[in-house]
Image 1 (cartoon, helix red, strand yellow):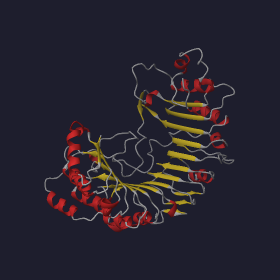
Image 2 (cartoon, rainbow, N blue to C red):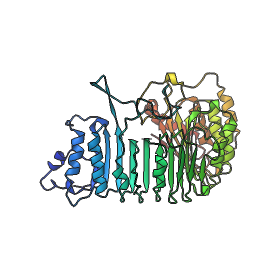
Image 3 (spheres, rainbow, N blue to C red):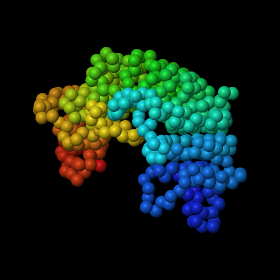
Image 4 (cartoon, rainbow, N blue to C red):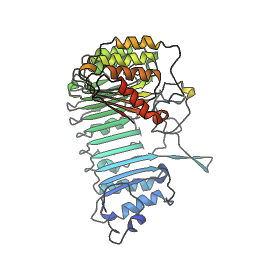
Length: 481
């Protein structure tokens, strides 16, 4: 038997294995439990009180066994018990604390419904009530963080989801913290910045859907990875580190080119940009702050762009920046591909990345008007709605599109591009035109990998044969999944 920090089953199941292993769980310094209500129920699952399950796992630890790792994913655990679990872990020298919470609400005093507080805090979301801030029905609902947690001097990794930030008044003592992940955090004005300023050794920082993250300054000189996701009230981000290697940003178009201030732009190797809003209502010069920001990362090797309403939108502006990124080796494009202008935009952008070695295309469904969305409170589902049926219009001149593509001079296809990955291949006209263009021009291509849509899975062999017939380089390996 191998004992590892995997999600635990109820203690009675472990002790039933054999007398020899009866006390093994008491010596494992990890408590990792997921509320059964958060996962699909199996036929052999017995009803278990989650609060009792966590309490038993903590209290069953041997006196000489500290709790080094506490991971809890639960729905509305008792507040006093939850605080006690965290305080016990912090006082025993915890190095990692990860607590993900969801909440239930009472309706008419007796019927319980899952709360709708897990709508994404994004003004460009699917719901008509989409907002960058918490609604009045959610305010005051989230548990406050135990202040003892922020005095744990051994803590190195902290991940909190759906909490109200409550910091100790006599100072914060988590000076060894290296990884901090805050998602859906309610915080008084200044509390979030106070926490960031008290972590001088941060290496990895993620801020997701934190409405009070307005002016963010990270003083840690050790920071290597920074992610800001749907913090739409943010006005400025200052990163003092010279070691930053990875940057992820999801939100609206930056208001100006000074939105991000980074001590050393040349240190960045990987950048992911996901613009939530539909850019069709914007004019080109409004994208200038974003293109200027990308242009400052002169040593960039990986760039991921997710744009709406279509893939590679404003391609001429981004192409001008791509020409200056001489070290760029991997380009990822995400967005709607079911339009002739989208196909041209992809070709233009790829054509201006001279030294590209890997291209990944992640097609998405079209951006629909908000009233056409079905409401969902699933916080994990943030992808675009899949198009119903064939989204290709009948008025498109496919021959003109094909001719315009074949006239393009795409340098990387003949010189450096070695791998192409395409997801959700639907077999529609635009998908086929772009795939054929890439395959027929790629002289040094080694691998062409395609993930088919569910509808095309039975035709996998026929589609793979078609791809092989389009190859310029007969040594190119074709993979259809």
